[in-house]
Length: 313
Image (cartoon, rainbow, N blue to C red; front, side, top):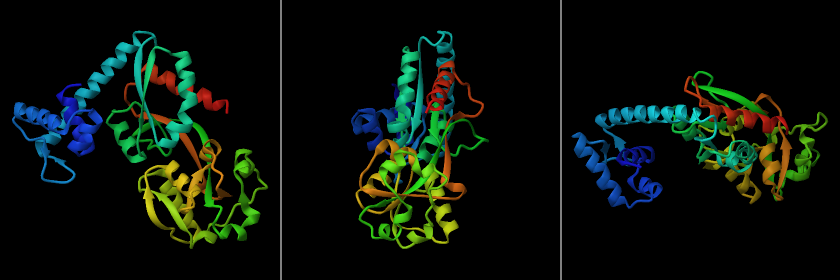
């Protein structure tokens, strides 16, 4: 890791303290390194008078050039690794916490068995940040929903049914018992049966919702489902991760939208579940990469492994 990496980490985090923590160096040492780079270039990269810090015009040009260099280096390593016939190499795979906790493990296990010489780095973050990193080629592959076909190439893995998770202690469950599903019902796939009735979301118009922050696929779907039902959900808290909203619902803090795949894998004994209807109540999980980028043989092998794993489930 060199001084360019230090500058780029500060740019990504918009903070010297956060970047220093990620880099395992002291903040004074990081600041000294960045100032050394600025002196050598004869420019100021960061405007330190703003919070969070921002790039100067010269800094924007430097970061653009730095990203071009990083792309060239990354693609060169990928091409060289391809010459090793999948005996060595490295790929970076990313996803939200739910994906890295429950979707990726069986893929990683199968891939390690087949390609022991290829290392896989796992990156976790929220959906908007991961999509930005995919476009800048900081990461190679992303497992997520709702890819932009203009910017990305994505391969479908499986479908998820959206459910409403409601704390058992909420009184509304008593009025909607004919529609209520238990954890074991969801794990047995009862919600997928044609004779399982969907709840009318309007019944929850006065409940407090736990929703994700803007930019997340589930946030968009939640608002579209509620809008179709004729109300705007009341929420006092916005979250980055789907698994967090689900855990808070299990703790009794509010109603949340979740997926059957999360419920099946994460469990949780303190919620009642309701089947939802409508075009936004089913979503597809994909594995994707930036369109028109060089796809190494290791990345292609990882995509094929992911398809194999979920074709069997």
